[in-house]
Image (tube, rainbow, N blue to C red; front, side):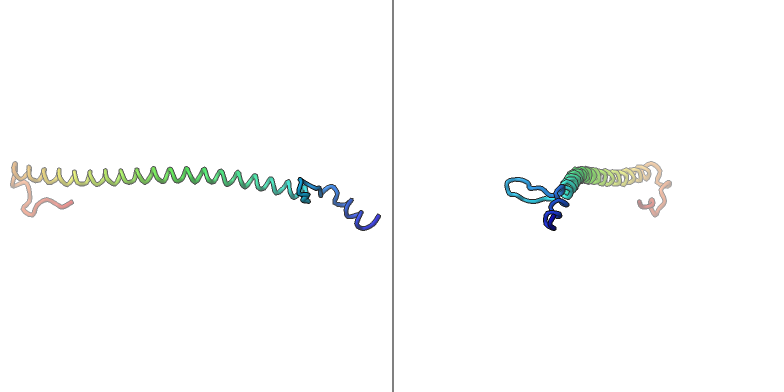
Length: 106
C-alpha cells in the first residue's frame, strides 16, 4: 500500500464529497459547527426577545414615572393651596391664634 492510499484509507470515514460543487467537508467538524450555529441562532433569538421585552418594560416604566411625577407635583401644589386657605380662615376666625410672623413655610 502506498502512502497516498494509506492516507485515503485513514481519512475515508471523515471526508466525503458533498453537493454538485464537489466541496470536501470533514463530517465531524461540519456536524459540530452546524450544532454550534443552531445553538447560537437560538441564543440570538432568545436575546432579541429579551431585549424587546426590556424595551417595552422600559417604555412602560418611563410613562409610569412621568405620571407619578405629575401626581406628586399636583399633590404638593394642592397641599400649599390648602395650607394658605387654612391660614386665611384661621386669621379670620381667630386672629390671635396665628403668630404675627406667620405660619411656618413648607
